[in-house]
Image (cartoon, rainbow, N blue to C red; front, side, top):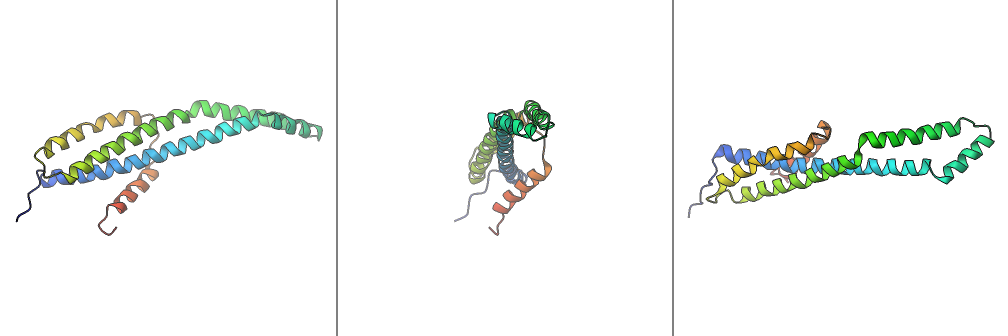
Length: 167
């Protein structure tokens, strides 16, 4: 019995495989970014809370009493700098955008994977075109996020390792 031939030509299968790996890598990348920005926001929030707390005021008073008159100015400056950075960095928004992109790239990767498994179906070419046409919509939210080439390379290598024949 002969195996059915795939409905996708060699070029389309190659493109599908590469797009599947890229979508999966980007999903990991944006998930990693979301974690990074959420962690940064937590640190900033805790630092602001600590610097503006009563315990800090007590420590400042004790420091001033011991001859460290510069301590209140330094702590006030640090609290202001952290608050300013928090407003400018917008880590909460970046984390939210990265979570959204992670979810959407993961969904796209699953669509590519399902198509890879069904490349013998009659509608394989139509499905490939539909999936590929959805890619530009994913680029828009990423504009506000900085691109970390090293981080992306790490996830690309991870995905390639996961899908290599040796594993």
